[in-house]
Image (tube, rainbow, N blue to C red; front, top):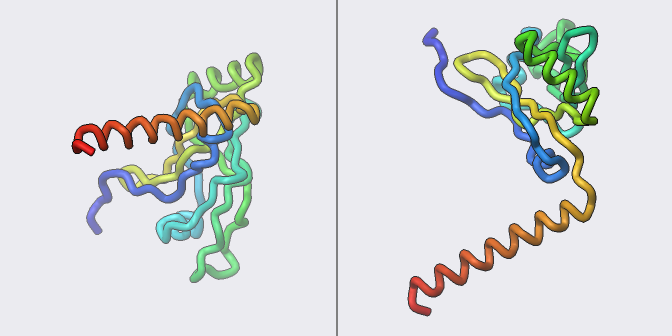
Length: 157
């Protein structure tokens, strides 16, 4: 079988960019079982409720839903089990210091295969307040209207 190359997106957490200010991102490998990998290759996962934590010098990904593999047997995995993230020691220490001192949280942004290996993009993020979310929506709409008007002017309307 030929070795996979490139990046194949499995799941994205679009709501995270709406609910949090993203301060820093990291790429981490995942320790998975066989049926989890098969389920991910089928493109099935949900990052909506997921978060990360540092426990005893190890990075863990919690509440990420990877559904049961359809053709699995009694060896199927738990759908929301605690999964270990593979990061360098310096990255784990940096994340741990920043989450302890500044009150940041660790949020998964996307889950993908990179060169045949399962990876997760995690972010150090600070939660947005309700007025921040409304402000971001208003900015996006204003930008859209400006682009629409510029297009009309260039077309001569």
